[in-house]
Every structure is written in structure tokens, then in C-alpha cells.
Image (cartoon, rainbow, N blue to C red; front, side, top):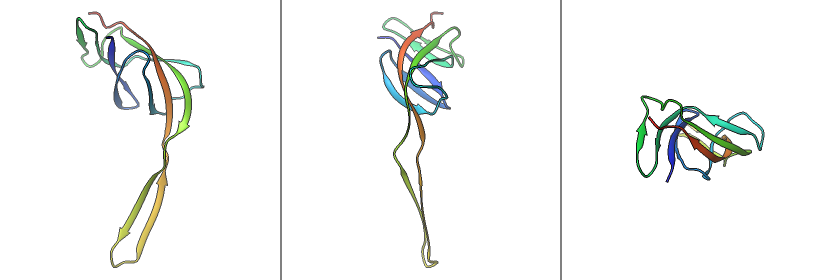
Length: 107
């Protein structure tokens, strides 16, 4: 099994080839290929390479499937005895990607 831990939009994701996941929005059109150079860890059945803080020469390539918006999150504010009520919503911008390849990480 070949896997890696990447950093994208300030968050860390454990990825394997063929994995489809939704991350915070990355600029690009559907069908384009992107590369993540911030690879924090790579591993397979034999060895694990941990970066300090990133693994030199390792890249993870992915294909953008679609740009979309997430589910609405309802935010309610309420103060007792003050007749104060506010309800707002928030929808995050997401990018759906498919991991195509993990390269490098052999030190």
C-alpha cells in the first residue's frame, strides 16, 4: 500500500492513489491536474519516510473533478432576556479531487 500525508489549505490529509476527497477550494477548472509539493510523510509496505517538515522530492498529483459548495451550516445567536436573536448561514467553497499518483519519498 502506497500512501502519503499532504498539506492542503492549512489542513492535513492522508491520501492513497485513487482516493476521492473534498478539500477547501483550490483554483482550477474541472479536469485539470494539480500537484501538491507539501508532502509531510510517505509510506509503503516496507518503509515510512517522515519529513522535517516536508519530504524532499516527493509530490502528489491529483485531478480536479469539480468545484462545488458544501452544505449550509446554520449559525444561531441568542441572548436570554434581551430579545436578541440572529440566524445566519454559511456554505464553504469546496474542490473535489481524485489522487492519481504519489512520487518520491525514498531517502
